[in-house]
Amino acid sequence: MPLALRALRLVTRLKVVDVSTASYEMFKMIMASNDLTDQHWEAARLLVEGAWIQNIEDSPPALGEPTEILKFLDHHLGLQGEGEDHGPSITSAVDAMLMDGWRYCDWALPPPMIVECVKKFNCVSPSFIRGVRSSLRPDNAFRLRGRTVDLIALISDQLFNSPTPVMEPEEMSEFSEHLTVYMIDHVNHGPQIQRRGVTILFEMLRSPEWRKQIVTRLWSMFAYSTRAYEKQESLKWCLQNAIELLEFTRGLPDGEGLRWWYCTLWFYFDKLDTTVRDEVEKIARDMSLGDGLSDLNMYLNLIGQEVAMVRKEVDELIMYESRPAEYVMKLRDRLVALEGNKYRLGRIILPHQ
Image (cartoon, rainbow, N blue to C red; front, top):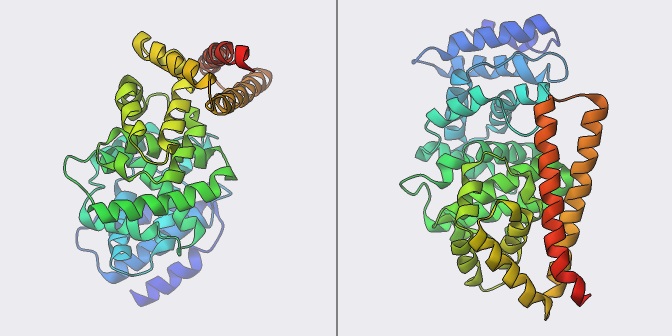
């Protein structure tokens, strides 16, 4: 086996498509065993390197069902949680799950097959969660922390809505702080980080326990709330329970939760029921008579920025015909809704300018 490992170290460094494909096939054969030794795990790490990382800019293999890569990830997160450094292996495993989405220029979400397989995998075992918490620590490499945030977004339904707590309250608080440090410090690095952050924040807000742990600075991620996945169940739940969440954020001491949750309700004003719309407009009228006018203008400006960005995206998609017509139509419908929301808010603000 040592000789075979030395050969693998040499072969998997070759940036050749055939090596990439063969590496993944051999990786799956090794991971099919239930009796893996340290040497097997070392071989698996080399094969992951050969399959994806060495060929990340060429033609990495299509992952298919991620059964083997999830087993690989689970093992190395367990070791990471015990104090060993397996950041490269964890990063590689998450890269592999995201790669198909990148291949088709969809930075939003991995393919549905991967999402469904992840849902069926136990991503909230104590060892898995310890590894996630360890990987998110601010003293880790930037890339590992970024891929850990990607993973958290992918498993967020399990993580934040588990029927039994997956962390102690002090661990939840630390986790929320570490999440905030990464996302707020790097939120301007691109829409994918904004999307991951909003996905996670909506899941936290849906949970009665996790919403108490949202760090003050994290609320500002809702400035990007329209990046949320349209079909995300936590987004639907939060909008359906908007008044309950308004009451919750009103009870927070710093005012940031209320400021940004109320902003989110204007972004999604068209999706609110009539009772909630009436309440949201009433709050705006009261705010416009006092110190709240500056916040209302900030909301109007943010919605305006979103309108401009969506309009530009629609124009480019039509020009280059790079997406199906159905996708473009949905985006145009969203643009019309945002313009309507902006108009409704502007009509309240205008008399007080």
